[in-house]
Every structure is written in C-alpha cells, then in structure tokens.
Amino acid sequence: MNHFSHTIGTRTYGFRDLKDLMAKATPARSGDYLAGVAASSAEERVAAQMTLAALPLGIFLQEVVIPYESDEVTRLIIDSHDAQAFEPVRHMTVGDFRDWLLSDQADETSLTALAPGITPEMAAAVSKIMRVQDLILVAKKCRVVTRFRNTIGLPNRLATRLQPNHPTDDATGIAASMVDGLLYGAGDAVIGINPATDNVQQVMRIVHMLDEVIRHYEIPTQSCVLTHVTNTIEAIERGAPVDLVFQSIAGSEAANRSFGIDLKLLGEAHEAALSLGRGTVGNNVMYFETGQGSALSANAHHGVDQQTCEARAYAVARKYKPLLINTVVGFIGPEYLYDGKQIVRAGLEDHFCGKLLGLPMGCDVCYTNHAEADQNDMDVLLTLLATAGCNFIMGVPGSDDIMLNYQTTSFHDALYARRLLGLKHAPEFEDWLQKMKIFRDTEKVELTDSLPPPFANALLRMA
Image 1 (cartoon, one colour):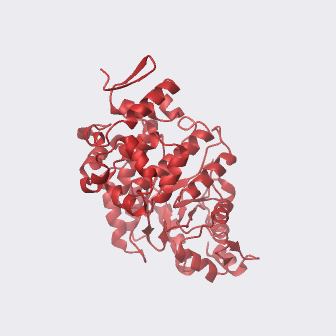
Image 2: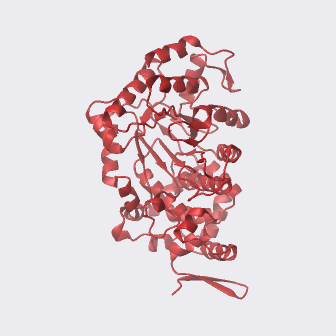
Image 3: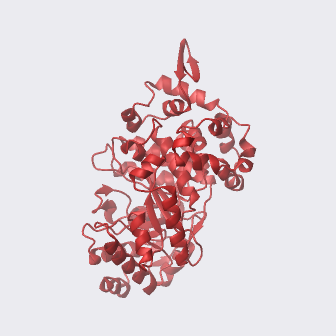
C-alpha cells in the first residue's frame, strides 16, 4: 500500500513510505541506482519532489527512515531535537521551508537559532527540491565559527587543510610538502596527515614531529593524524601531544560499526582530547570526514538514499562540536557519484545540509581517476563552494595525493579562490604569515617575491 502519491496527467505515482519518497525525489546519481532506490524516470522524480514539497516538516519527527529501536543514530536525532528552536518553522511544509530559507527573513541570526531544531532528514528533504543556486545562497547565509588555536569560519575567510601525505611516511618527504604548503599560505584549518602505516607507534612519531614544527615556529594552527579513533585514544594515554581527534563517520549505526565505532567510543575520544587542554583560543577538538555512499558501500543504508544517509552523519558530528568536518565528496568513486555533474551537485548538497544543521563544513573537492570527471569539474565545484562560504578545503601538492591516489585541490587552488573572491585566512594565521614574511599583503593575497630560505631549510632539517 502506498503511503504517498502524486498524479501527473493521467498517471499516478505511489511511494510506499517516507524513505521511498525521499529516495525517489533525489537528483539522479549512480549510487542510488546501484542500491535500487532511485526514481525510474525523470517524471517519477518530479512527482516525488512535488509530493515531498507538500509534506509538513513535522512528519520527519513522526516517521523515521531507519527504525528508532534498532539504530542509535536515529535515537540521537529524535532525542536531541530542540522543539523550541524548531517552533518558527513548525507549521511549514518542505516547500514553504525552501521559500523561507531563500527569503530575507532567513538571515545569519535566525538560521543559527534554527539549527538545533532541524533534523538531518529535514535538511536533506529541502535540498532535494532546491536548485544549485538555492543551495549556494542559503549556505552563504549560514555562519558556523569554531576555534582551537585559531578561528575558522569567519565571514570572507577560507581556510585550508595542509595535507602533506607521503606513501612511506618519510619524514623528509612530509616536511618538504609542509614547507611547500606553508609558503603558499596553506594550513590554517589543520596540518593533517593520513599515515601510510596505521599503528599507534607510527601515529605517535608523526604527532610528535608535527607538534615540534608548530611549537618551534609558533604556528597558530593545529595538527591531526587521520588514524582510527582507537589509535588516537591510545596515543593520548601514552602521552602524545594530540591536538585533534579524527574519525570517519556515517549516517547509520551499522555503517559506523563497519568503521569500528559507536557514539560511546566517540564520546570517550572527545573527553580524552578535551582533557589535554591544548587549545589556546577554543576547545573544538574533533575532526570528522564523511562521504555520500559510505553507508551503501558497507551494506548499511537500510534502503535510504545516499544523500539522506550523508545528512544523518552530520547529526553524529554535531553531537561532539567539531572544529572541522568535511565531505570527501568524490573519493569513494563513480559507483556512487558517476561524473563531474553528480560530484558538483553532491558537494553543494553536503555543504548546504551541514551548514543548515550548524556544522563547520568544509569539502575535499576531489575525484578518483576512474570517474567521469576531471580537474575542470573540480574548478567549478571549488568556485561554487568558495562562493557559498565553505569553511575550508584541502591543500595538496599539485592536486595529486601520492599516498591516497586521488585528485583534489592544490595550494594554488586556494590562492585562486582567495584572489577571485577577496577571501582571507584565519585571522591568527594571517598575522603569522605576515610576521614570517611569507605573505607581503594579505589584503591582496600576495606572496613575497622570494622564498624565505632560513625558514624552509630549517624546517627540512627538523625532519
């Protein structure tokens, strides 16, 4: 029996439940076809979107897409919902909500107050009936500021994660990439390394190296080794100078279990990092990464479309007040986002949903080499995200991560976005760049005429 229906001409389209309706209303992407949940035609998709637009927002508090009894993410979403914050939009349909978000009434103040009252499914639903320009405009109005050793997310600022990965974790190779990135002004979001050898001993070696560099040069930034959360907890217990705790997260309990985590473990990691008290201007200590398709790849999506699953991951992140969260939008591969068009749309959806839910969203603007995408598509997404107020992007030498073997954004790409849109670094990091004579005039985003050899050579010697 169909729970929802809509007639176009002489044909009536039925949708068995909210989960089915949400999936059918989603703009086309390969992962939903792979899962067997996508609309069978453009007309069915339109029928689903029109049906979804007419639904009252309150239905998402009454009907869940994954059962409350069997999923701790659903329980988190429902139990932590702020009814008072939701009150201003409680009477609206999904379509009314879209119109309100685009209106002048929805400004930074009202959107900040609203965020605790919005569930991931509400955010996903409204995104499904929005054009690209709608996603950009509303996300631009959402402001989420976080702090650890600097301040990220302020207006007209764009931070970068300096990502000096190396396929053998060679210290000199890592240091060389760090020098390259710092001399282009990268690294105010975090200096974050994906270790090639993922064990506690190696994690501690890299953490100590990063800490020495940051302390020696008094860089107002934070470090992170992107290892499993259990490794980081053990490293903290063994005295490692950990700044941020990293973990990949997903939108269902079963998907998180496939990552070897649950909410209790994340809570323990959060408390462990807070106990170190290493932040100087704030105490946001978590760094999360997500990506459309992760729940499907773990066979843990429960028939929910991949974009709604992605938005549900943001409820997990929101609980722990992260400094950073980013969608690694094209990393999982063309099975989930087939080409540049799908990657661009997904990146903007993720950024919009995260910001609407009150998260400091960044994006790894990326693709794998077997996807139907190229660097021109990434230029498009980078430009749109920077326009939409994205908190941070990645900075990798030459856009090519030689350890993870995927294509992302370079130090030069961040420089382009800043010059194009008049964006600046995190303010504390901006001051450091000028003090170190790396940048001459951050108002114009100008590099100095020559590299500062003492700084670069000394850092390499430290490796």
